[in-house]
Image (spheres, rainbow, N blue to C red):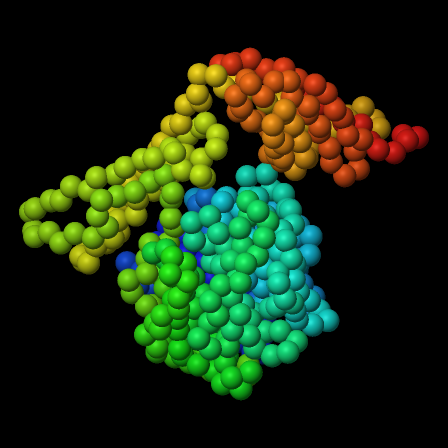
Length: 434
């Protein structure tokens, strides 16, 4: 129980947790085609109730309690391609028992528990591309053990434990307006449940209801389009505080107290885990006879709200079949979006020069670009680089580079259409060197 679970490339990963007596740093992967679990290299530290998410072909693990009940700040990243763990930027405010989901290229962590108790309004966002953290708008109420999921361009959260008891409240979060909005309540109060998103729906199953008194196997699905909840089939086991992931998989948990179970189960039909707004197919299921084939038309659309910049966008079409012949390779797809004729690119590197005169790229530095009509806030990547395409009608630009511990720098930049204009920054320490 208290394990973290995520689905990555059709396989199910489960890490950490406890059997009620011993805490674990073990990691495992389940292959649905082989119908078998395999052990992976252990994490560096035991974690109970961590947050686990899959993004960009890698597994990210945050928070959880250490053996002494303290939340773990270290971020660990597992790469199936190399079979090894690496370290990411520490979580600014680590929690156990928080909800986690992926939205717009960022991993969101909502609420959670500390060493002293449960219930937080903190919303934190991790950017895997730049290995940096930022804060979101506070959750409407102190919360832990809730469920969250991303659909289209919004985050949906429901249930959880509050200081007043178990709640059925549900909310949506819009990152573009940085605001939470109440949506339809859960049919029952619920905490410690399994949760996921699939097929454009938000799913919850199991957990504790009746204000901490009853462990249930009930489940529900939320449709953002109609703002309604619909009952799911009851799970085979009434468990709480287990791991869950798109599939809809439920791994581990407890039927009561600290009596951890080995149970794992799947609710079929919810395997469309990731929605790609610029990609669509004309059919998602076909029935063919031996020796026959079927065509599937794949369509691309660059005119979606999620695409605001030129570049190459990649995805994979996952194909599964009820055959005895094993896994079917995914189909890679790519969409290249070219800049409009009147656009130009501003790019550069933000470097910090320490008191010894040694330069180093500043990861996660803030670059504020302001034009006559709008303002854009960027974060530098691992190499200290940033890039933004704009229409030349925005000239001239005011560009500010800043990071904690370094003196900010401002300059005016004029860029040209169809060209890349470089604007590098060398920041000095914000203290007097001795």
